[in-house]
Image (tube, rainbow, N blue to C red; front, side, top):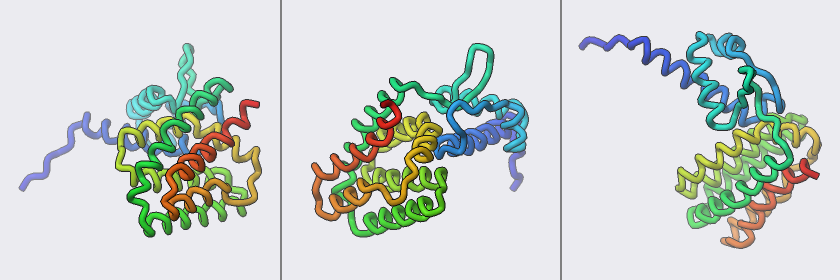
Length: 217
């Protein structure tokens, strides 16, 4: 059997998708500060690709809101205004309690144990003053819960909001200087154990909005 030889266009597509996904993860988890400048050359060097896949990855991330492109062609991570932070916090407050509510009927002990493990990872990041590790573990906590909702469109929209907020959330956690796992995470786990949907919705809504809205005051 003859193995098909990849066409150049297929190779470029695979490269740009790899760069897109890797860069998207870095932005979402706050590995770049708000307003950080990126260049196609720098991205290409970072991921060992040519300018074409780097350019395509940037184009997709601009469309997602994970990067911003100025009229002069300068590429930066989002530096959000107070109004934009408030808007994105409101979106999280609408969608994420709904995802949690839909996950509740499938919140068996295995899920609760995974959430408790995620909280342990958050505690380690807090102890190490690791802001990026904290943000990654915090979003993983929420993603673990929301996957049980079996609502892929809502989760995809939520992750797009996380992407836009990533650099700002990292800056927020650095400013808050947390010393323990968020109290609302404990309330979320307790509500899941009790089957308390109103309590779960309230805990999730509080968790995803309280910190962000501190930035707008």
